[in-house]
Image (cartoon, rainbow, N blue to C red; front, side):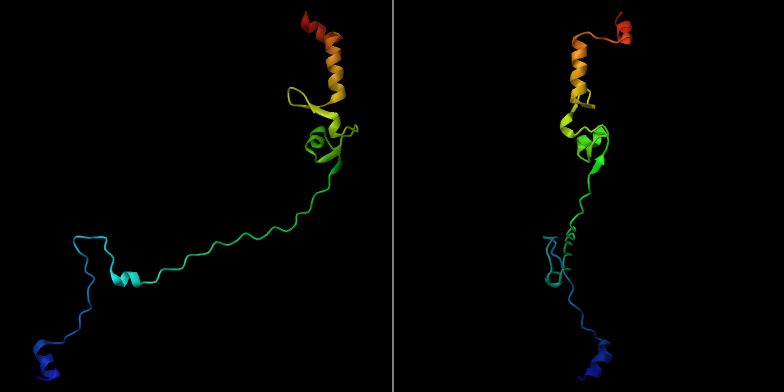
Length: 120
């Protein structure tokens, strides 16, 4: 029986590729052909570029009391430096000298006429 006679009898025969069979017992079983497939390489995280040396801003010479308190200015227009300033109980920046004068005036009851009217 020649190959041509065989083809006439049975028709064109094509070799069937083996099908992937999954066991009914184990649905999650892997197949050898799937394990052989190469995985995609993971992307590497890019490093952040190093920051160049930052230029330090020069301090302002004259500024508000708040700027002097924060350190962005050297002194106020009245010549007050940070060691001359303080925060009062309300959170405002005031000079230490004026704060002390106010306390002593309050203690001595040297009230202004407006304050005397409001107390009556």
